[in-house]
Image 1: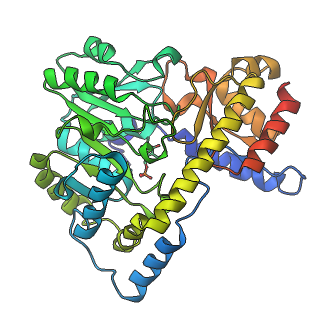
Image 2: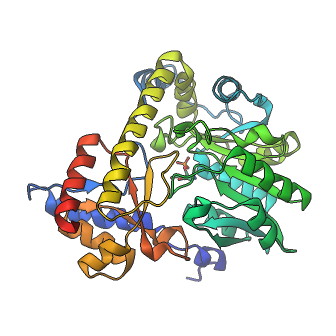
Image 3: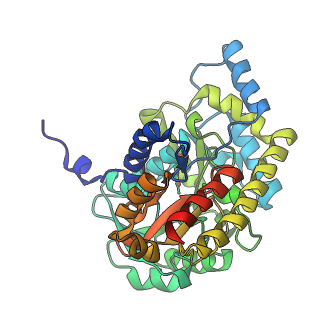
Length: 394
Ligand SMILES: Cc1ncc(COP(=O)(O)O)c(C=O)c1O
């Protein structure tokens, strides 16, 4: 059967492939006294808090399971709007918020609404792989620009200006980023946005980890910079609801009806049950729990990053958000006599029963020298992982 060229251009999501291999090995390791420790995971190790679970059960009991408007339940859009005001001090009218089936659907809608075949979109290398594939799926081309640790692995206004050409349509930046956990400061974001605006382009900012920011310097939404920013967000990470498939995007008023038309046709609506549940995320009790979890992620980071550095898995930039560590693994590769991060990931999985993600997914420039480790695991598991890695690498 002939597969479309569009589908052929989408590379495998290697994170998932490695996760499959880790699961298979874990079955064998279960009785070894050293069960697999999963540090390859890109989702919180917490589930939705009690009020959210109860709200979902109640929606089912009450039969609130029919389609909602394509843009989402008006009350939920209103609550998200209030959250922006309370948490970030930014007024975002509910009318500009469109609820979606995760950030993934939000990204798909944004790309389909704004990108034409042949358009180029600038992104940093490394960055979240699916984002470049959303651009490809819309017929565009993601242009990955290599970044360095000194740049916090993010693009700057100067780099955006230098890379811009006639085909460039805009930027797609994640702040905080997956895989690095590093953000763009609001002042640099402002400069980037001014360059993009000046060139008549679009700024799509993936803020899915914004709720999990650990430093005041970085934890601000780009939406503060103007009504023409397109911000992507989700209930997956800060709100611990990955499998519920719920997210949202904020778009300029003029784009709402375009996104609505696409959403009606492509998705009809996001999950009704998940939307009813998500309203309980914004109750004081749930928000207090989310803040407790954020503090836990920060405590894990503060333990784990120095421990990795001591092991020679050096993390060149302290992550300011999310739950990832982007570690240079050249010394570890030399120590174990393996070539690059892909082989190292399998060596660590086989020999220490510690699963990590090789850099391959996230770009092309220097990703063979990096692995991504996740702190979405308990402090006890992180400590056990460090002790196993110490035995192997010290
Ligand atoms: C940067 C980034 N954007 C988007 C997504 C997709 O998230 P969702 O579960 O909301 O679709 C992820 C998931 O890991 C991510 O890391």
